[in-house]
Length: 337
Image (cartoon, rainbow, N blue to C red; front, side):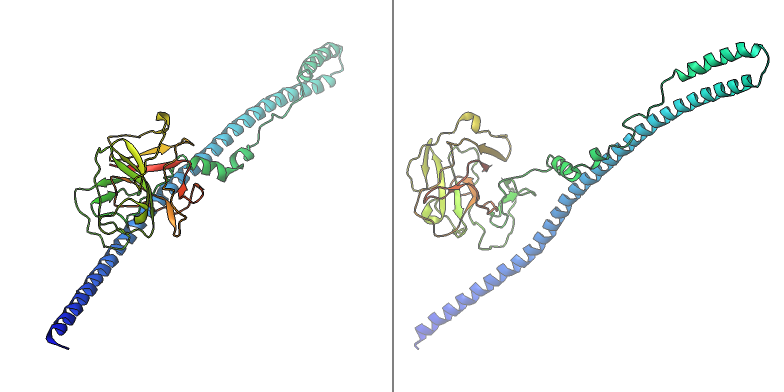
């Protein structure tokens, strides 16, 4: 082996060593970031469960208070009836005593007095027989019937489902995700994150730019460097450019979105959600050949070419149409400005 070949071989070995060192650094960063993720995720889980537990505790106290209130009402009602019965019993007892006293008299005035006593006794007997009031017992069925379901149904108003969850493992370091992973903003500081294979190295701050690309990305799509928004690159997209809609291959498509079906939430916020509900206004999916790899229909991108992140949800939803991709009848999309 001549001197030139030795130098070339040495350079290759040095390059390999540098790559190994870089990979080792990346793994070190991954381990450190993993620990941060565990701590953050654990805190978020505890916080979410604390909210649920607080709701359940308040709901339990509310229902126990309602039970005690009903008990007090029933008790007062029964005691009131018992007092009325006692008054009637006392009056009847007095009449009995009066009759017995008159019976012990054998004189002539006895007959007159007895008539008076009988009149009083008849007046007592004219009172209707005592009747037990209905509804004196606790309505146990109202308190326990479908209790778990009713609490769960009420809990649904306290929790919110987001159809698009952003994956922090794919986001560029300049993109700051909310704690609940439902919105994203362009941060003022760069987050030093591990360069894992899933992470996009590119990102774009679209601002109020009218042009955007919306679509689906294959899990196997390349995330490093600039990528095109075409099926060849793993993207099935609807592109809006200069007022014209097209697919990822540049073919013009017609999109009909009624105004009452496109509802922006708040244009002043960093991110807003809108929903396409019309059955005739599905998001366009490139009608390419049969897919040979998994496409994650809930991995939605909306940006100017590339948002630099992908939603995390991987459940196939919607309808498969022939040899095209997957489309959803109601697609809730996170808009990234």
